[in-house]
Amino acid sequence: MRFSRAYIPTTKESPKDAQLPSHIYLSRAGFVAQVASGLYNFLPLGKRVLRKIETIINEEMAACGALEVDLSFVTPAELWEESGRIEKFGKELLRFRDRKDNLFVLGPTHEEMMVSIVRNRVTSYKQLPLNVYQIKTKFRDEARPRFGLMRAREFVMKDGYSFHASTEDLDREFDAMEAAYKRILERLGLSFRIVEADSGAIGGTGSKELMVLAQSGEDTLAVCDTCEYGANVEAARRAPRSTVPEAPEADFAKFKTPNIKSIDDLSAFFHTDPFYTLKAVIKRAVYTEGSEPVCFFIRGCDELQEVKARNSVGAIDLVDITEEELREIGLVPGFVGPLDQDKTRFVMDNNTRDATSMICGANETDYHFVGVTLSVMNEASFADLVAVQEGDGCPHCGGKLLHTKGIEVGHIFKLGTVYSAPLKAEYLDENGRSQPFIMGTYGMGVSRLVAAVIEQHHDERGCIWTHATAPYMVNVMVSNIKEEAHMAYAETLYLELQSRGIETILDDRKERFGFKMSDAELIGFPLTVIIGKELENEQVQIMIRATREIITIDAAGILDKIEELTR
Ligand code: ATP
Ligand code: MG
Image (cartoon, rainbow, N blue to C red; front, side, top):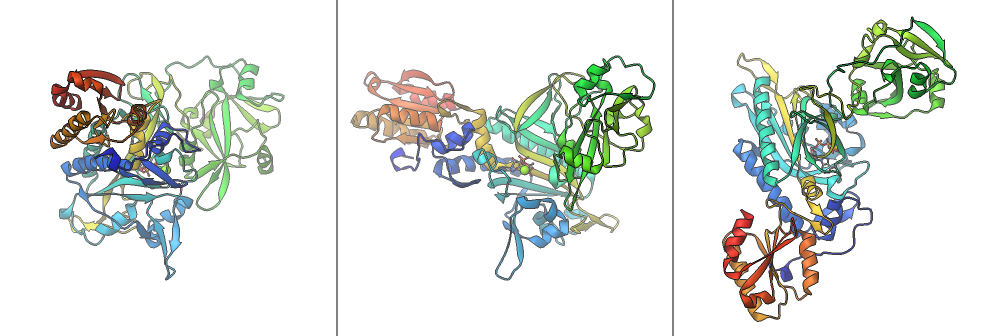
């Protein structure tokens, strides 16, 4: 491509609300252009990067025997009613009516549609397993579209679904997909981590996320400093404490604790470790229909993990509750405890099961109970509610857990029969019995990956594309296009590189050297060959974008050098 004929509208202006490097540079370097909140046009360079990522995904899927399809973006709302997900998905699902008044949704993910294409077509276990996928536009009316391509409303996703006659076969395919996803990210040149995850609104178990490691990531991961264990904090586990602090000595009693409301005040008052105090976190749980206050009890030394808490009651959201509301329900803010508490639904953290020597609210102003043995609560509902902290023990090896930030670029999980059962998608097993398909689902954020590459690879001057994602590998730049000999050399080099299969752009624009150089850095081509005065001494320079190192080499050896650098 000749730069003078290309459409690469670079600019010094950043989009006004942009904070993330990928948002700023992809816009400034002319890869994408915003249309409206969460909507982006891909310009020629952006489209090239997108296609490269898609090609790698397609190649790895083909190697696993997955079959590419292309499903209608517009899906009948009926399918979403059948699966019961129309309510659960809430406002992210964009609904509309056609001229005949039929209700449709813009596909935010395609489980229902994919089930519908095999339903009544795949009828026997002999036709299984099957793995079908597409790379397709998705629409989610995100509450807060932000960070450019990272959290858009319209975006490109690779979504794959597998169908099996046994859980063993699903497990095999799941492992194969995990390995394929790993290869895709390796080929893209990204550093990443595969972590245990929460399954979210889609439902299912055995969920794993592929996280590109970057400071700007929206997800917090707990990763072990010793073994491979890593998990999204929404799903992270920890080893039980190996030592516990000394317990306060007290028989069961009600104790006056005037105005002692916080865990800090409480543990100071009783000269005890917060481990022996019980923290009450009260939230309003919002369900698809209705809402209710719920009280979550955890040890005073722990923090509530909201996603775990939300899952423990099957809510779609947890919202804060005011002290006035608490009083209206009959709770005493600052003194809420689980004993004799019938005002709200409540859930106890697993770490409080059978706990002894505990101090907890007495549900009465200025009173706490001491010496509480929580085995009296054994009938209550228990769940893992706590947020894993840095320094906690790894549940696998006892190593130390650390926090790091990640960008979720992929999510794979075992759905089982969560969709096939309600949608009545069944096959006949070996004994002629009807069974719902056992399914897996494998998503990858293709357009988010474009941004993730830049979040991981950029500097203060712009993008630094990895070799696999670069829109062009080499930029051949002529300092002064009026120098005919320089232009002639550049032309020959440009054609020769292309004939060797190295994607090249020729910067033949009638612009100043400095201007072209800053464009080259902003756009982020891995290599820029600079053809200038040194050509008279048979020398040219190559700027390696990642390090900004400039090397001078003999013009005669340029092709070999470029092949070496791009290998
Ligand atoms: P997130 O937690 O980031 O909202 P999700 O759990 O809703 O993601 P999935 O439903 O698992 O995402 O979708 C599969 C993949 O699609 C995600 O791993 C992510 O890479 C991508 N993705 C999801 N939402 C968006 C979005 N709004 N913009 C761009 N990519 C997205
Ligand atoms: Mg989401």
